[in-house]
Length: 331
Image 1 (cartoon, rainbow, N blue to C red):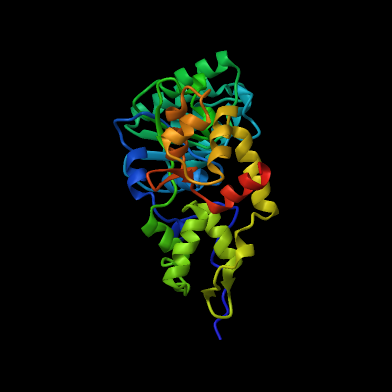
Image 2 (image 1 turned 45 degrees about the vertical axis):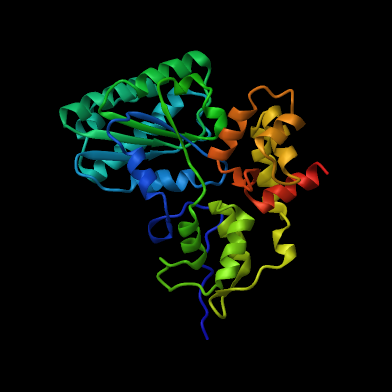
């Protein structure tokens, strides 16, 4: 009898063989012609996993660092102190940037000054710094301007800063190129569902059930992992068939949807509520929501985020889970 651990990962960063898809996006994010990129994605879309994956890649002439500033986001000195510690640890491991480590003193903690010093040493060592910053930075406008200047100070510093859609309008992003993190493409979603890269072997799942899972989740990485975790049967290394109750948002999803919904402005929410009852064309949305002047822009943004998908010549909520949550919230 087969008895193995549940291979689906819920709520934590995925690494190595558990990381799927986004290879083309990885190349785009590492493009040397783009020095500063904002990576925009919905909650639980896999931003942290993607940044960690990029930081763990090894390329000659590059110094890669993943930096998570959460909890320090409103203080340039605390950000600098934390970043300095992370850089020093990685530098000693890689035997690189040792001059930077030696020259740092206890009082030099402002992240802007730190980045300027780092770039100077990197240029002398002919290194490119790839700094992958996870979401969480929230500064006053003047401090945003200072940090933006430091992040854009040199072609030797390549920055990818991840966050949700509220990041786009911040002054910190001036001069950054925006790239959206989409849901999985169908083939990658199927690979995750079937666990084709798992060291313990594939999970047995019928093709019709794969399609149902994709439709229910909208190919959202977290929703796929969560639903498959629930469906997994370790005694047979297979997924049981979906039941109607499996598509009702549970407590964990309810909290996730509440947080995500609050990130949208009132016009975004009106569009989502309107589409929760079923697909609509743009013309239908214009008729139902005549007061929203930038409707096309909003729908395009929600589509790029993977919140919406196209269906029957119109748009619909991509995930059955989220659509049902919206319908229950706004009957």
